[in-house]
Amino acid sequence: MAQLKRSERLLLTLFGVALFLVVNFFLYLKASEFLRSAQDEYDSVELLKLESDSLMSEKDLWDERAAWLDQNQPYFENGNVAETALLGSLNQLAAENGLAVDDQDIGDRNVTPQYEQVEAVFNVTGGKRIYTRTTLRALSQNDTVLGLVLSF
Image 1: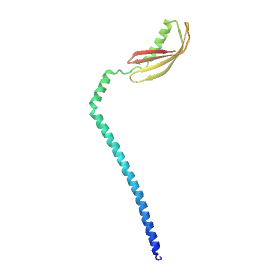
Image 2 (image 1 turned 135 degrees about the vertical axis):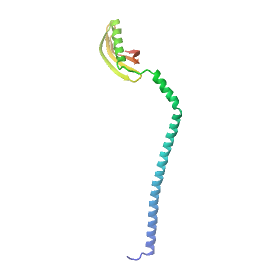
Image 3 (image 1 turned 90 degrees about the vertical axis):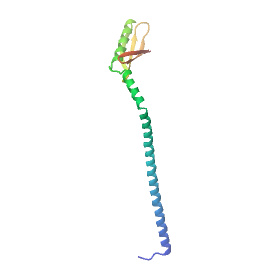
């Protein structure tokens, strides 16, 4: 192999130093990215710990509240109370006022553990007026009907 000239050795040294600096720069970027992500993860865990400590300090309050709700909050057990009451009231009111109810249709239902809301859409004929697409909503809770809402 031939002997390198002084300028070639200088150029090769500069290239080696530049390559060394570029590799170290990329390694530095990767290391700082890793440290940043580790710090973010640590901060999120620390925040979760503070939140958990705060909730645990109020645990007795939440346990008392849950016990009170279990004792005093009625739970919905039968799935047809509002629908039955709605159609029963509708037919009873129609019969008392000499009206005929046509095209009864149970519309939207909203059922939760605490209440049931059901909607009936129907046409009413008889008397002096004809009501079309009349909507009646019933809300029941704990097998008791809380209210009926009629809209024309």
